[in-house]
Image 1 (cartoon, rainbow, N blue to C red):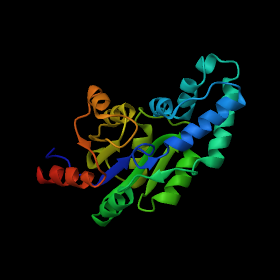
Image 2: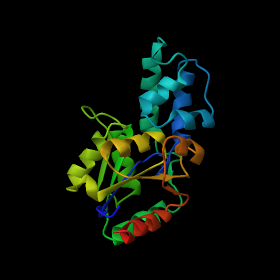
Image 3: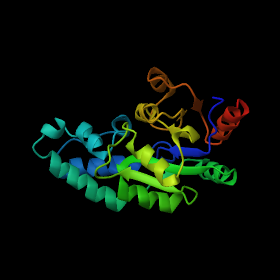
Length: 223
C-alpha cells in the first residue's frame, strides 16, 4: 500500500450509490407484461443486475436473446425505464454525507456504470453534485468488467490509476477494479452479499458508507 497516494474515488452506481432495484424491477416487468411473459420477483432482479440493462433483460426474458420478441421486450424496457428511472430510486442512507466528506477532504470522484449513459448523467446531476465525472454505457466503450469506463473517468479527471480506488457492490465491480489495476472496496448494502463477494475475491468490506473514510484513512496511515 505504501507506494500509493489515493486522491481519487471511482464508484459504481446501482447498488453502491443508488438503490435502483425497484425501478429496474418495474421496468423489467412492464416489458415482460407487454410481451406476454411471466413477471420476475425483486429477488430475481437483484441477481440479474450488474452487467448492464441488456444483460438484465437477457436473464429476465425466457430463452433470452433467442426469444423471437426479445428485441421488442428490450425496447419496451428502455422506453419505460427512460421515463420512470427515478420513480423510487434514492441514494442509500449515508451516501450524500460520504460524498460531501470526501469532497471536503480534497478527493475527486467519478461514477463508472453499466447503466445507459443518459440515465447515468441524469441521476448524477440529480443526486451527486460532488461527483466530477460520470461515465455510463456508451457506444465504442466496452462495459464493465472491461476497464474502459474507469480509465476514461481517470483521463477526464486528469488522474493516474495509481491515485485511485474503486468502490462497488458486485463481482463485476471486483473484476473491473482488477482489470483497471485498482484496489477495490466492496459495499455490503448493495445487490450481493458478503459470502458471494468473498467467493469472488473481495478482501475489503464496508457495512456503512462513512466507513469508506476509515478505509482511506487506514490506507494513508500505512504510507
